[in-house]
Image (cartoon, rainbow, N blue to C red):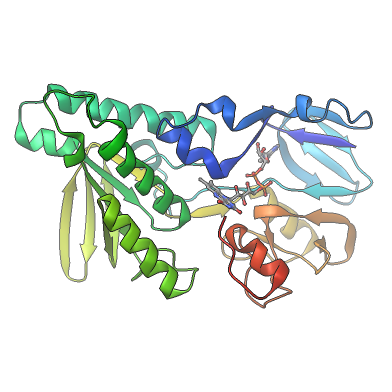
Length: 307
Ligand SMILES: Cc1cc2nc3c(=O)[nH]c(=O)nc-3n(C[C@H](O)[C@H](O)[C@H](O)COP(=O)(O)OP(=O)(O)OC[C@H]3O[C@@H](n4cnc5c(N)ncnc54)[C@H](O)[C@@H]3O)c2cc1C
């Protein structure tokens, strides 16, 4: 068995928000693949980037070579999606990798430090305004964790500013946060965030993201929100390898680029290839897409499980 990855570590993404807000260090949520598999004598780990799959010749094409296979499992996951505005990525980092989390942590800490030294009231407000774009599970977690550090962790750490006066704004285009969950859970989550000091604003379309402000259209009205710290949790796109693979074998990929798989996760007419995890579009049990946060429900088919 060969495990190929362009990173040398496994990452537990559900706790990335804790690294992004200083609660955990990167080593707490990432482990070297070689360490994980060191007792698995029939497994080898290759540090390599897959660029394509040569289905006809049963080879994975790498950026610097190739590896042949009898059975292939593709699990290259998903990355942030900026809906055609890749330039926003520099200004508003997403939260998918350790590098993203440490980048966000640096921005958040620098914002409080800059606020401590700021005398201009408008600039001070911009340093203490944190905008999170996207009210799915990641945005909700991140907003809650930011509110906790502003209200609790930093409570006694500054002299010129009161960190609790930080404004944490969660912008969500649909009319409720956590739209893939039942409305009652969205309402409970919004109430919890309000208790933590997070302001949720729904129904706004983000039209521009610049280093010092975000433009949002609410109905007919355009609004600029001044902030030096904007974070992006609004969308994901499957790894491009999925679409390449689907095109090569004439399989279907959904709008987010996930490969539509058979009930056993194999690909149509290719029982030697399986696609799993975030790269797979699987809807055989409930008729609806089985998302990561709903896996428990997909497997039991009867109840909502939130991890
Ligand atoms: C902030 C955050 C919080 C989350 N919280 C939860 C939660 O609470 N509960 C839950 O169930 N899910 C949660 N998820 C989702 C969960 O983490 C994902 O569903 C899960 O990681 C998907 O696993 P995967 O193996 O499909 O993809 P990934 O974990 O993304 O792994 C993909 C791997 O493929 C490698 N790779 C990608 N492209 C290539 C290439 N071309 N060549 C070689 N290697 C490549 C990457 O380096 C990576 O190691 C969360 C996700 C995030 C980002």
